[in-house]
Length: 298
Image (cartoon, rainbow, N blue to C red; front, side, top):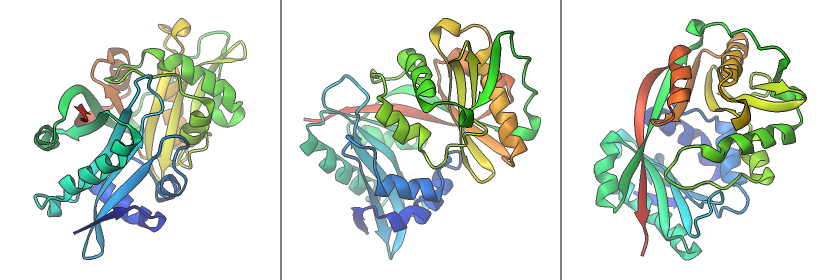
C-alpha cells in the first residue's frame, strides 16, 4: 500500500471508486480533476489516495473550514476505501495523512461523515457521531408536474441571471441551515468557485424564483451525464411558506429530465422537516444515511 497526494490524472479512478462506495453522489471526472488541480482558495485543501499495485483503492480530502466562525475548524471529507481492500489499515493511513495535513494549520476541531458501517472506525479514531444526514433518489419519469406559479413571480433558469443575485439569495437562505458546525455567510469568491463556476452546474436546468427582480428561491442542479445532484434548494426567510422551494425544485427536475437526466439524488439533515416533506412529495425515496462526526485534536 502507498498513500500519496492526489494528482489530476487520478480523477477517473477516483470517480470510479466513489461510484462503487457512494453510488448516490454525483461528481464528474472533469470537476474532480479541477478540484484537484485548482482547489478552493483560502482553504489549504489537499487530497490523498491509497494505491495497491498501481490501482487507486482509497481517497480522502482535508481542508481548513473557511465558512465557520470557529477558529481552528477543519474537515476530513469522503474518506473511503474499496470494499475489497478494507481491514488492512488503508483507512487509518488515509486518516493519518489527512490529520497530518491539518494539524500544522492550527486545526483543533475536525469534522467528517460516516456511514453506519463506518461508525465503529470513526469512534475508534476519536470521533463522536452527531447529526443524521439522509440521502434519497427519484427516477425523474415519476416526478409530479410543477405546481402553478403564484402571481407576480417568474421562473428563470440560472443561465439568465446575474450570479451575484443568486449569491445574495444563497447567503440569505443559508443563515439557519442545520448542522453541527456554525456556518458563516459564504463569501462571493467561495460561491463563484463552489457553485457558479463548478463544471457540473447545469445552469439551464437550475431554476430560480424571481419576485420584483429579486431571487427569492432557487434549486441548483449539478449533473454528470444522465445523473444529477440537487445541490441546494432554498427560499430566503421572508418568502417562506408559499411553496416557492417546491416550485423551484419541481421545475428544475423537469428541465433536467427534458435534457436527458434519468435519476436525481439529494441529501437533507434529518431535522430539516420542510425539505424532507417536499422531497417525499416529489417521489424521493431513501438510499443511504450518514452521520456527522466531530473530533477534537490535542
